[in-house]
Length: 303
Image (cartoon, rainbow, N blue to C red; front, side, top):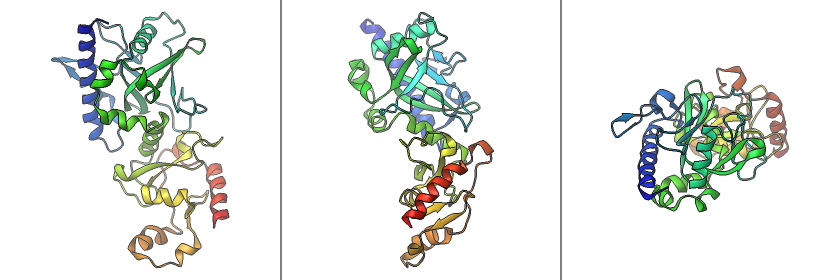
């Protein structure tokens, strides 16, 4: 690219990221309707950022601007996540199988130029989690896909774009494996952005807790392996201070029930013993009972 083209691309992409940053800041779970995402305007022109083909490029530009993965039902593993990849990268499929298709050439151009893109990951019907900025790190022709990530991409990113991106984008994303924001958004959406134990609804205080830990052979980032928990109940669950039976009944370690340590212990931990977690409305999004049983055995051993 010549300098004028780079500056034009830079201005457009920074405007896209600013638009998405504003939208996600006002969304409890970071999930935004496609209609709102497509309200983006640049220089007085309205531009749809999510398109049917999944790969958005603008007239006059050869490089992809945005990519999309469609909604996956809660019980299924999201497509293209390589859960054996220690870097947590997502693998994005070609449009078709022809490497010379115009959309695939647009992806390759973005990769070759080190251009940042916005990635829209389907969380529900018409609902997307914007992940930005991301980079196409590698092409795998024999598998008809590109590798998407943001951590190791920083060294190969176009220097002009890299220097111009706001640091908080980069600092936030480089500390996170690629699949984690997707898993969190899907789980929080399934639980209506509330803690399954105490119903706290402040998204900044909520996590997507794994039933079977991430990295375990059965710890896939699927909604039935997740429960939306506030940070205190997530920590208690992870440390086996609190256990959840396969029928959803909560148990608390006996020693904690005997302690006296102020209102947080009393109301936040002791009084939840014997209550039942709140389940998602959608049956396919509810916790997998086999996973709960396996994790509850761990709780009993710790008790």
